Length: 547
Image 1 (cartoon, rainbow, N blue to C red):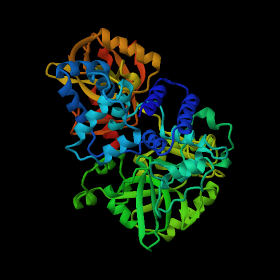
Image 2 (image 1 turned 60 degrees about the vertical axis):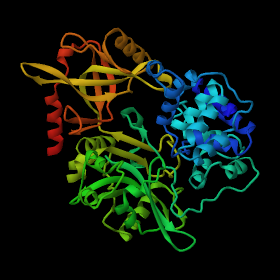
Image 3 (image 1 turned 90 degrees about the vertical axis):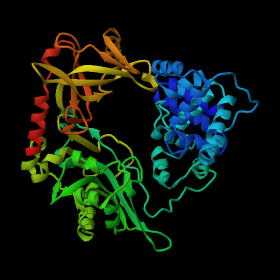
Image 4 (image 1 turned 135 degrees about the vertical axis):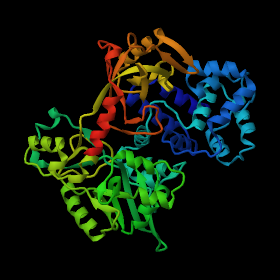
């Protein structure tokens, strides 16, 4: 465990991508199985522990230290694992530190009532860095700047002939501690083979498209299709060795979401894999993302929910047909296969996303601005832009340059007043980086600010430092970890907030909810009294509803 803790500590302070890969790869070379396999599982987010939760950690530290002191310390540090690791009393009392494999097995198998005592034993046996790593493992939020892709790239670095994409392609059929994966990469074993008849295949992603990116390209080399405002999914189905049909619905990140969409899974009677968009379709018309949200993250799926929010897949690409892997084929050929596949397997939950006709880039730009007139018709309100794809592009893992582009609508913006700020986590734990902002509305004889959203990205490191200083110098009240910042008609700070969508929401005090809000500009030049009003947001919602 100490070696794994040292790795996490080094990664948390290392800003360079290639250096992170070297650190992880060196750890894999020097660490035997199964320890390195469990470390890989932790780095890729593959570990889930049923009973080990943040509340358990809070309970243990409250018993060992003064609760008020803990609350004050947690407020200052901003990270639960780091706070508890530093505050845990006493020096390590055991001669033996538990290996990572023992901890993973203990967290997975120990009964709920016995887990606190076992966790105490481990915390007593570890030093501060080891305790921090253990608690990060439990909370499931490492926040060390190392993505799953980075960890898989480090695995590939162990072999001379293996590329990161090769690891991605075999990954869906693997399980921790990945001994067969390491054996293959190091040349000691055969390439792992996925026996799952309905596996997840890593998706191909696109780069944002800007005017300067594509004007140099020949438009005849590209095809375009609508980018629908839903959730990217993969529908995979096949027959297992016993002749049983298996179908699954996967999120873009590889999470099995089949249980939440039984209506879709039941209709996946084909043998193949489709890349598409999860949408809500009512009376043949695509609904906005805000309607789709009613189906997301539901613990139970009732017949009423299925009837009111019928799920649908709009297909973009065909990855597999029968046992044939189509991903090496050019997009134009896969598109023909997809059209024939959907026509043959036609049912009420799957259709195809139409291509957008254009002769030149100016024509495509016009279609982007007016989807209704360019073929989207009644579904235009659910279009969030365009996907532009090279006709000869294979379907490859990750985000390759020059093959696929996404050209989204320009974001909407609002000038809002900063009202509250909270410390971030991980590297941002010492900065006030999470901001609540509001707009003006009528209140009696005057006007008041009402919160309309929260944002925690969109600014540079330099701008974050400026915002942090403003919060510290202009705090008027505190509510636990949250600071109230001065916000009157004469004093305060205006932020230009960009967002992708907006809808009515009964759960919010303002009655509106934004999608993907972010700070696009700090308006040092604008008086708070000139910030936008709630009426302008309500008008925007009404216009979108009419459209």
